[in-house]
Length: 164
Image (cartoon, rainbow, N blue to C red; front, top):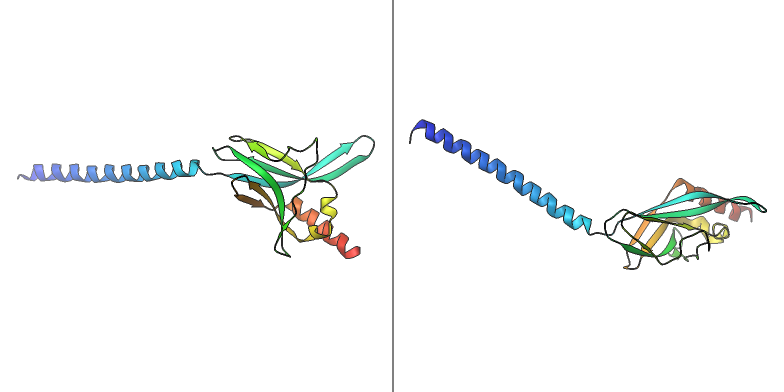
């Protein structure tokens, strides 16, 4: 073989190897993305909500926002609170009628729901042990979250239980 043909053969081999490597990496990324796209993904955000009634005045409620960040419809069956002590779930609550979305609630792609916690729940004795808010789906998956709003309600419950 002549030196020119050897260099051309080497260049074609290097180009083929580079192209094959890029194709392999892109194929793996595409496969991972396809699997990831079919997973249930929820974002849970405890927040403060200010509720105003003309006769009774304003009050602060705890609101749990649940957003479907995935591409698969999912049904949220209940919202519960995880406790630090004892290690059990705080009994799930019935959302405020008229304000909250009812449970179970089907979340389509990229939609959200709001669940308002009744005002008496953060005043319960066990609420001082709450660590996270949790949304549970019909298929049994649980998605947890904490926030400054939830922590402030927990601190108020702890202070109330120490005084009372």
